[in-house]
Length: 106
Image 1 (cartoon, rainbow, N blue to C red):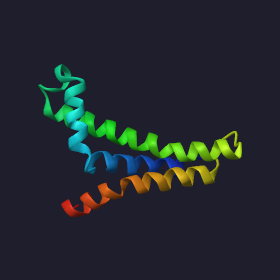
Image 2 (spheres, helix red, strand yellow):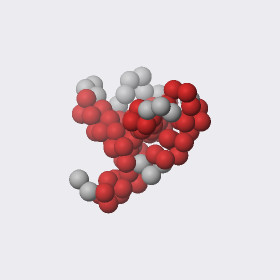
Image 3 (cartoon, rainbow, N blue to C red):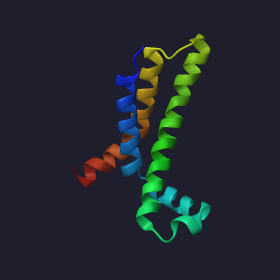
Image 4 (cartoon, rainbow, N blue to C red):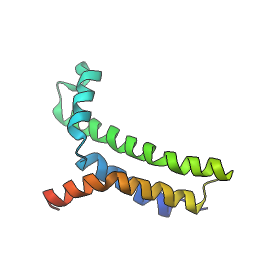
């Protein structure tokens, strides 16, 4: 099965959530607390890494329902249904970021 048609929108939703999520200030604060010596001299690196952590976390959390579906059905490989579940949950997690994106403007 070709996963590319599903992987590209999932990654795009993750990136959008990483950049415009309302949780970004909390993630920035957590990054400062977790690694103060590494991030404090460079605010752009701090925001980039926080955005990257948030987008990765979005994709990982959204994959949990798809993995549970595959476990319940006993699928050996990814099915289109599980990929649609992953895409839908990623989209749902990205809704607050889409709202922020539309409020800020293109």
